[in-house]
Image 1 (cartoon, rainbow over the protein chains, first blue to last red):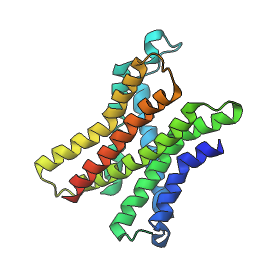
Image 2 (image 1 turned 120 degrees about the vertical axis):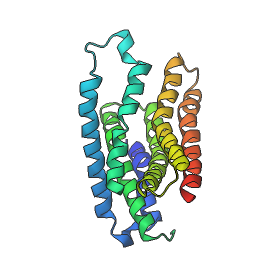
Image 3 (image 1 turned 45 degrees about the vertical axis):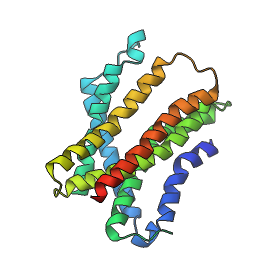
Image 4 (image 1 turned 180 degrees about the horizontal axis):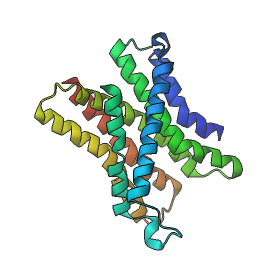
Length: 88
Length: 136
């Protein structure tokens, strides 16, 4: 588990340290950006729950459907609007 | 250490925060699940490694969206930017459909090559093209 955690989060720390973002006091911006990502995910989940609800109990077809995945990918673009708002 | 300017620092910080959020949402629960399992699965390693490629993709994405947000791009450039952004969301769906279509992998490294290889190639291509476009 520790190995996986290090593999997952290690590069983020390495990038932060490697570019010496500490001198720019970037902790606040990182946390702010993470907060915006969380907001975008909440918005995405709400839209997904409305437009592409999960079928329960899952059937053979509902486990993986390429149409459903495509819809999810399109709805994931909510992130782009939030990121655009954050950057502008 | 690599010297960077204020704008680059801001974009990098936003990218790191965004990638951190994505890692927590997509991988953290998956990592926690391993506490209860005594076995190590190759999926855990591939998921953790794919987070590295996500970081590269997210940093490129932040650069692309920032270029769009500047509103100084030509129409042709905007089309390229929108296409690249669209690809970032559509290619993983295509890769996943390929993976689902494959019934059973005979060896673990075949699975790693298929899952991680596809993602790695896309992430590097996306970064290179994104870098070339944002440099214009």
